[in-house]
Length: 438
Image 1 (tube, rainbow, N blue to C red):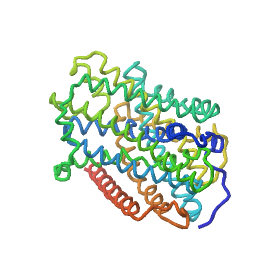
Image 2 (image 1 turned 60 degrees about the vertical axis):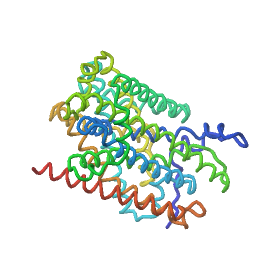
Image 3 (image 1 turned 90 degrees about the vertical axis):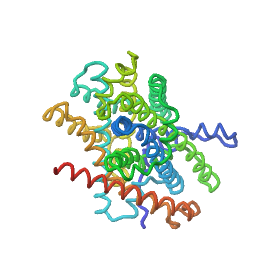
Image 4 (image 1 turned 30 degrees about the vertical axis):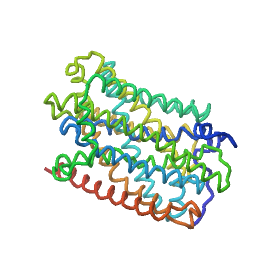
């Protein structure tokens, strides 16, 4: 393994947030809080909405256990990202560049860029759909409007990384507030919710249920979040001693665990609302976001229900596009060590998603958005293994990690999670190809 000369990830904000020395637990926790919420938005983006709505409308509360298990896997993987970033001072893309050959790194970079574009595509479509539903803005114009978030991100980051975190936390809080209201409106069955969190053997026996369950896993664990998280934990200026690094790992893991637990509650809320509103009313085939929006108010008898749903969708899409754009900068710098002005890096990342989205809408019509969302999740599933396996491999390498290497039990659990993810996503990809060939 070679150590190449590279600038730190996101050099403009690297080690810019001070950590109070000798202060109490809560002061330090607040100082470290933030990166987990930027990561969490990838676990509640419009791609998740589509699978959660489909699962809730068709199978009621049964797939809540899948959401819970997939989020637990995500919590584990993101904790490994914190460990890698703190122990090595490098992000996942940079360590890949040191460890693998230039040819392999180029291939990994291309695959990662495609996955970021696919994720960004889903988020752009979700935001554009929200603008269309709320304000009757055509999808094409909605995509263009949402593309300007690059400027917002640059302005905020120039003021300090805390401003970016504050914006994202505000958007996440907006989503949580909206779905709290939707759950109150829908009056779900508490007993059904509790039983839904208990794994049901029928999930493995019913092919259509298993298909949606695997889609939920594929939509939940986002590959670009692994690169993003290992980089943004380094915005904290911890001291480079063994004790302070262990402290950074502890507080960074708490931050991500709390944030992803909130993401779990939001994803569960989306499925619960779909189950309580559509499944119980006999609407078992609601899978499109637009259909959910149109049916919510009439079925619940609350005129504001659809509008609240639309605002939550807009907040979800916009927060996710911010982090996907940032991830694009991280992987380009990490894999290629390519130095471009920040505005140009983010503009290129955004264009990779905006251009194909606009082409699809113009040539195939606005009705193609549902297929685009499905396609984006398949692409993410294909990429996931290429991020998870190196992450576990690196954090289990004592030569790289030193005393921060994964303990034996963590290696076993992480390897089992990787195997489950790889097998499920291969199955999802195979089923999708079979469906397309029919």
